[in-house]
Image (cartoon, rainbow, N blue to C red):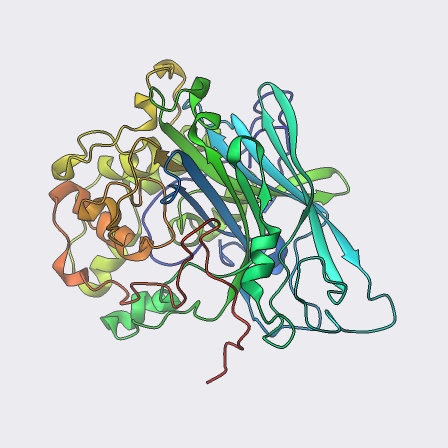
Length: 462
């Protein structure tokens, strides 16, 4: 299998890719054709394989570990029964890590699923009574998973028969959903943890950006488009040493993270979804390149003129200037190359963020470093007790674009970054309010997997 493993509204830049090459013989999920929330034509018709967001952060309650998370299946209406939501049993879901800067995966966590369906032809019900435990006989449909870890040394099965936390069908059916989630968390070697199951979509934003950038006059802001919708989450919590190059998280603390979906087709598995930084495929890439981006791997990004052009000559600032008369920063945009293709270096303009980019990992061979679109995390930056939703731009060095936490306001951060905040060290006053959606509608959890519990209330319920 090859170590290679995909969201929404106004953001900044990143990259495209064309053909993806294999990483190394032992780690090879295969490549292929067609993702973020409905961001590309092909994946829009295949929601079970549509990767919506990727998160990577030092665990706030276990700072010796890192939490990696990816979500799938956008816009899950909580009351969408009787066939509720599930992972695709003919696909492989991956979270991938590059720790040596060559834009190829060095570690892959891969989930595959199987169904336990006891309904047969006797009933249409998802459950025929209250479900009080993850193995309750009243739960008539359940999914189980296998979690494998791929490295250069080989393949390790971490979880053989994990249970997916079910879709939340309501208070009468699942009176204590928090217990069901807790029971679904699997233990991993060396104190790690794994989770698969439904959650309230933790991303928050006003998606009316597509109506001429919020109505052409910022009148269409302040409504959380994703309020009330659920997603399906996959997450692992892993000791830093298992992710770092040569196992040395102090010497080599920076990793690149992205996710992919490989779907089975008559010719074998094909990669149909890819996500690293949020919103890249939705807002940065033109329509003609969206499906291509979902099919390729990061190691090809910087070799294509389309990648460099989209980062150094971004489209979004020009649109903002045309509609809102806010002057676009001068190009070429080297600041955006650093943020989205190489990682934030120690002195990123006036911000002077004390963050080492991936190329500054001490054991990285500089000659083999490849700029590429992926979410980069410096594991050496400790969690803060007072996180700021604007992350690095507000001086909170643990926040986006240094990894991504659940509460990072990537819409507002990205709008500021694309307008040159990293160059000037100042926020653009005209866009200071952003989309006026500053937090998720449901609270995040204090412990792994941190994502909010899934809603059981209909989105249109008053």
